Length: 359
Image (spheres, rainbow, N blue to C red):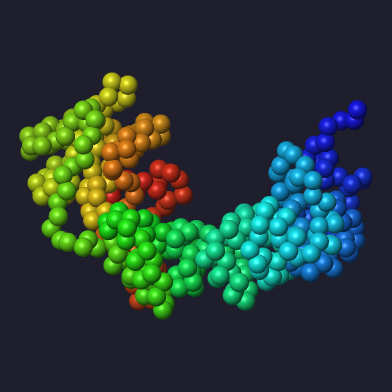
């Protein structure tokens, strides 16, 4: 018996063919794989319609990153299969109409793998497909923005008004999640319907900011019920003591504690160092605002993750305040106020937005 087929072996048709400069320009990172199936001068590939060249890149990426042979004759499928059949191969099942036409509006240069993944994922969403079918030109960056919003927001009136900054789209998605916390999941349809009537990016983002306002003013929620190793600070004396013990500035927040908008705890668990923790309340409920060790030292990632997990189970969220987010939504799209300043949030820890004690 011969050697078992590997991913590289599946791709090789005899001696590999080097990619020509033209193929390198058109295919980018896909060029080497394409050259194995369509040897130099690659005329069989380069003369294909753009849609089928994009299809080839998707199938080769899938073949290369799979440990099993999918049984697809890629050359035959790309060159000879009917559009409907090739679409089903790409979707690995039933495919909505318009996929091959969409591939034909994606330009001559092949895309990166993640952009193709975004496209195929969006073609499983009926509302997103409606938008894609009517886009005269489909660009990878724009597709990434559409893929970044929750599926509930992928309606034409919202998608056409998405600005080009990914930070703005992320904030819109965050606002939708907070709006459901504020008004209840039962209001999701009404919120999306209203946002879908926006006539501009400014209108859409101002609607999102409005959705972060509470329906009733003056509500003060009781602090969350936490495990007994979260010791709440209930008196001025206790606040002074914890500030001295941890050497921090929590005494500055006495008025917020008195009004019920803030809660401070000494978190003492035998397996971990003591933590001074602050929660703040806004229209979306209680959120983790800060958690530090003595002398304002940071918790380890493992320690912080375990703390966040416990708090999430008790209904405490992480991230920025609803008020901060509402202001930034407007600044994202207002030509007079923006662009909005977005703090770093590339890592899990940065996305917790710890240190946001004032809002």
